[in-house]
Structure formats: C-alpha cells, structure tokens
Amino acid sequence: MAVKDCGGHKGCECERERLYRKCCAALLAFILLVLFVVLIVWLVLRPHKPKLYLQDLSVLCLNVTPPASTYLFTTMQATVAARNVNDKVGIYYDKVDLYAQYKNMAITVPTQLPVEYQGHNDQSVWSPYLHSMDSVQLPPELAVALAQDETAGYVLIDIRLDGQIRWKVGSWISGHYHLRVNCPALLTVNEGKGSYGANTGGGNGYFRFQQAAACAVDV
Image 1 (spheres, rainbow, N blue to C red):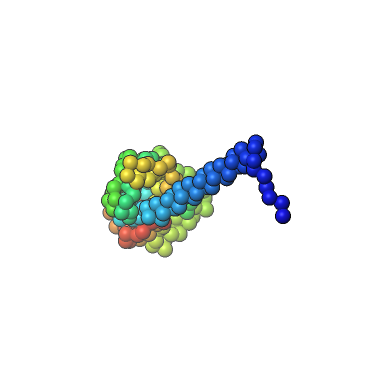
Image 2: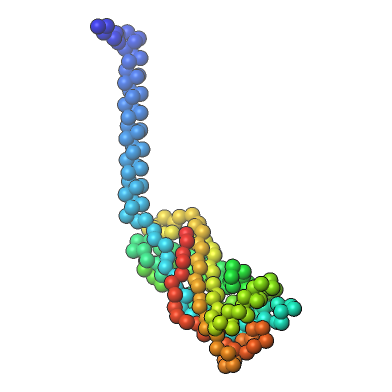
C-alpha cells in the first residue's frame, strides 16, 4: 500500500489542501447555522394575515336610468374593521384603495384609505364614502341582473380593498406585500319605503345591510 509523501514542497501542498477543506467546512457550517436561525425566527415570528370585517354598508343613493341608457349613479358608505392578529409583528398600511363591485364590475371609483401603522393586536376602523364617477354605464345584462335582484329582494355588493402592506418586527421593516380583500355585502330591498332615496330601474325602494361579515384576505 502506497503511503502519500507530504515532504518538501508536497508537504506545503498537503497543508494548503487541509486548510482549504477546513475553510470550506467552516463556511458550510456557518451557512447552515444562519439558515437554521432564519428558519427558527420565521417559525416563531411568522406573520399572520390581518383579519378584516365589513361592519356596515349604507346605500345613500343607487340610481339606474331606464334600460335604453343603463347608467348607474351611486353613493355608499362602507365601514370596514381591520385587526392585526400578530403578537410580535406590526403592519403598515401604505396604500390601500377601497371600492364597490357588482358582479365583478367596479361601480365606484377607488377611495384611498389613510396611511396607517397597526401595532400588535391593534384594530383600525375605516368608514369612507364611495362614489361613482359621474355615472357608470352598465352592460345591458348587468342592468337586467340588477333589476332581477331588486325584484327578488336581495342585492349582493362586493366591497374590495386593494393595496400594499409591510411587516414590522422590532426595528426591521419588510418590503411591500400585495393586499387583496373581498367583503361581500348582502342587501335586502324594501320597495316603496324610499328611506335612502334609492331608485333602480324606475322603482323606489331602499337597501338595508343584513349583518357584519368576515372578509376574504389574500397577502
């Protein structure tokens, strides 16, 4: 069995090789340690999505012109509550827009909510007014669907939030994450009351929000 000779200049090469292997092993151990620490921190401080609830939706005006034109005019006030459920992570709401949809079509222009920081387990409540931009032209099929919903006595409006948030852990602040929220609002229709001055398809009536509902949140 041959014995490797590490004498002379070959001894220097062997020493460098051993040093190189030690450096590689130390670097690998350091990387594994860092990854392990990051994993532990992530598991301990992993941020949870905020929880949002639609507390109220007041329809102040909802007018649809006759079917030949099918223009919609609306004014609403939505009350949305957001709660940070994290014990050790804060949330920055940097730019969040709120608007209303009917059957996946926006019927109000986006209203930007104020920039806000939410501490651990804090809650915020927003109550912005939502307006259509002069008027929204509904496709004929949506105008028919809205008239049918009113006749049936129920109208489903989706209150949407779309924007950016950041997480804060200690002094560290993350990059931006896309926040998408959908809050379904079931409204009952009462003909002939006129409490809100609402008018759809020529009939008089008003819309009453049924009950507070949890929102679907995606980050």
